[in-house]
Image 1 (cartoon, rainbow over the protein chains, first blue to last red):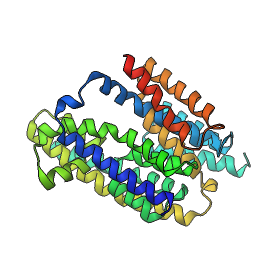
Image 2 (cartoon, one colour):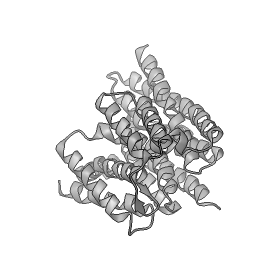
Image 3 (cartoon, chains in turn yellow, blue):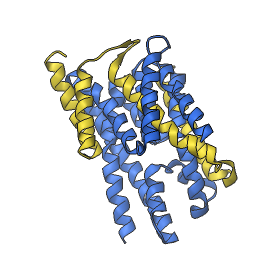
Length: 103
Length: 213
């Protein structure tokens, strides 16, 4: 089985387990303030790490290329409070233009 | 009834992001079928982007699954919040669990009236599910037709999607500081750790900071 298939099945099974667990366990199990705090911070660190790794790395090297142009457009769009599709599409356009100019 | 209208418009708007996921997923070397199955079965945007983001960057299936699962842990807390409102058992609880996501919980908990909370949850949950899956398929087919993803900027669409997801969470000094620390830690690990590991390791930052206060 390819890593992609393992990832699809594993992610889906665990995602459902977490959702179902929430509906089934006593409220006191997950309402500890420490768990709530960690749970707020986890998406922040993981999503930020995913931004950096996907934007400026290729395999095990740090590479600044056309993707930086796309990311800059995304950040400008976010500062202008643009909706999500505009952010993603704007990044794609910015990156594509830089790519064609060989950055 | 306004809760149904709100549910519909949110469902359509959020579902349309499925295009970005489908395209990103195919760009990260997942097949169209695998992309659609992720949207149907995982059905949690950030987790889906995470698993394709980790594998697309060369990470192993295990680190992809672990990152996606940590990101999906908030859905357990949503379930906890929705259970006393929905009060469902058996098959209905299984269906409710699957559509317990950011949007269905947000719409439900924004309603004052208890009947509206239940209506909002189901309408948004099903609405997002339908549109998210339709648009995933369209995005995946579109990206497959395109060929070289870099020429169309799709390789930048992935980090852009992540920054769009994290931006609204950077609400105070503490969250911005920890985000900055996550950038430094993940990039410092890239040259020395296997792909995928630099991402999941940043969870340690969340645990240390969240543990202490």
